[in-house]
Length: 346
Image (cartoon, rainbow, N blue to C red):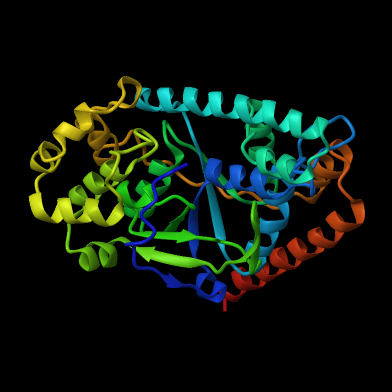
C-alpha cells in the first residue's frame, strides 16, 4: 500500500550507468511483492513448478539481480522483522481484502473471465515463511548480502543508507522511506523500460528522490514531512484523514508548522473517523521519528553457481539452458572482480 505523495515530490530520472559501483539497500518485502504481483500468466496465475509451488519471486530475484550485478551494483536486501503493534490492524484489514479478492478470483475463474481473473489475482499476494527463507538462500548464493531487520525492513534500509558512508541509497517503491529519513530513495530499479500493470503495459524509468531536495522544494523539515504523510495516510493509518490530499496536507503543514498545532487543526475531522480508522498521530509520528533499527553489518559471499542451479533447476524446474546463460553472465562478473582486485597490487 504505502504512502502516496507522488504529486508533490521532486525527483529525477536516473540512468542505470550512474549506479555502477554503488552499494544499494533494498527493501526486500516491497521488492518481492512487486515480483509476485507482476510476474504472472495472462490469467493472473503466478509462475509455479509442477508441485504448485509459487516461483514468481525466485524468477524476479534471479533475473533482475543478475542484470543489476552485471551493471556493477552491489546489493543488500533488507528483510522485515516483527511488525510494530500499530501495523497489526492494517495487516488484518489486508488479509480481509485478500480473502475477498480470492473469492472474486474464484468466481471469475468459474465464469472464465480472464480480465477479472488478472485483476483480482494481483490482490491475492502472500509471502509465506518458506518463500522468504528460499529468497534469502537464493540471494546469498548470488553473492548478495542479506540483512534481517529488527522490525520494518524499509526503516532499516533507510537507516543504513543514512549512517553508512558506503551506502549510496535505499531502494523501494514506497515513499515511506523518506519519512524514515532515507537521504536518497531509488524507485523503479530495473533495466526493463516497461512494466505490466492491471491496465496494461506502462513505460518506466529508474528515478532518484533526494530527501534534502524534497524538503527544500516543499519548504518544510523532516518532522513536518512525517506529519504530511500521516495526514495523507501511511501503512499505520491507511485511510489518513478524509478530504485531505497531498496538496492540502502540504498547505496545513506549512501553515501550522508544529506537529501539535497541525493535528489540532484537523482534530474535528479525526474525531469523525470510524472507530476502526481512528489513530494516535503521536504514536505514528514516533514510529517514523525513532523506528526500531540496528547497525547491521553486511556480509557479501561468493557467487555459488551450483547452489543456484540446485534451487532453481533441480528443485523448482527452471529452464536449465536459461539458468546456464545467466550463470555465464555471473561468471563474467566474478572475473571482472578478480581483475579489479588484482589491479590493486600494481
